[in-house]
Length: 64
Image (tube, rainbow, N blue to C red; front, side):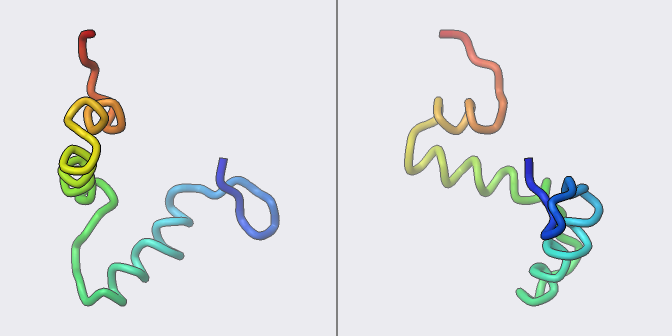
């Protein structure tokens, strides 16, 4: 669990407004959501560690 500096649970909306949106703005981007990073992250993991690792990390159910 992630917490605030006061030790309280960090809520998604607070994290998004305080950290994510400001990082997106600082990067000169617009209309980027955390979910938009899912596919690029999956591609990076698959290239580096393999498709099965990417599937596991992204929560895709696979059969053994």
